[in-house]
Image (cartoon, rainbow, N blue to C red; front, side):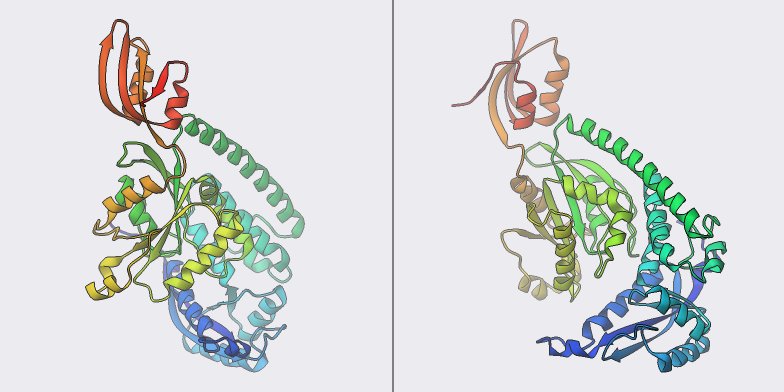
Length: 432
């Protein structure tokens, strides 16, 4: 497939990471180790935004400088490095206050953005639905509001590069009043869309199917697994946050009952609370799910820390105690002896979504782990003229025997309990 790239896709950026020396007292973790790893992740984020990473610097400090994050001496060094690398954009791996942002831009004579603005830019690239686009714009405007002083040029710039997509391109806001008006309008529109989606969910739940939500760190292989299980053909990309809008498909389990499988946006460390709203649509599917599949890239040496970050967000969403099945993905990237050494436990399963290894076992485990809608072995009769009910039994259950008796259909079948409840107007007796 041919990919078209604009000139902004090659924007050169210079990255800045900051570590704190006081972290050295943590057992087993050297001072700055986590921040250095986060800087590598920032580089992946920048590439996902279409940038060319021209270079980076990392500074260890006793404490954060409230005026500029890195101190006046380091600003001069950063200015020289950015100009030497011909990088007009500097990206910080920490979130910057409005004061720090202004001082850094003045001192370096470069455009400066932080981790949050970079992530929002990626969201702006990947949002496809109307709601997703509105959610991203809402998050961008909330980010801009306290940073308006001295930022009129950025707000009026069209296609100015990474960190300026969305509201800035449309010249929507030039002052706080207009931003607040736009925020109010977007919020009302999103609430209307949410109500519509809630109605669609209620309609979907009229044929009771439990929902299984795929969650995990960004780029853990969730969309590849989603495609492998549902044949949905959703976008699969190594870029971070490639999946933003929710996708739901029905999947049939070995017991013949069906569940709804939901793909969600990938999580990432230090995700600002305000960004949660930017992919609220997908997270609602997590909150409505009966079972959560926590997908882990087992080949990533830092997968344990990544899973901890995912766990924090799930707890914030109020689903920390939801039934969960841990899926260790990408076992095809491990040597056979290493894969054997990383065996899971009773609540985990090892797979390769790319090769299909372990997917049959995964479906069996999902079937067993679903906490709702147990399968009942039933004998019952249905009127022959009620073709819809008979079709429902065949579609959502497993018919073991059926025969016509006068004007009724006598059936022996294994049915989800929810389907049996829907047919309660007819005599239903569990097999003794």
